[in-house]
Image (cartoon, helix red, strand yellow):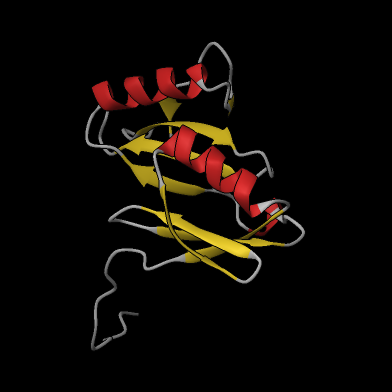
Length: 130
């Protein structure tokens, strides 16, 4: 059943993640994903770019609360460059040796999955990338 909603969601404004050490996590996101510090707040740091802001606040990480967060890349060349960059920075990548693969069996979308130091799972994907 289709529900009529009088608005459409835009880009992600922000979301918050509990991390052991916000400064350490912010540095990891800067090195691994190129996100920049936007501002600091009590017990935390917000990092991001034009598309998303992640509020990293001091707390007990709970990576099982979300399965993963995915960010789209424009093409397979960029996905391969991202993989090389993540490897260079010793990011914990899933499926060593066969890192780039379909999002699900039979999917045309291709992705790579990895974990940040607090155990949260991330994906970089190309829609229709096969």
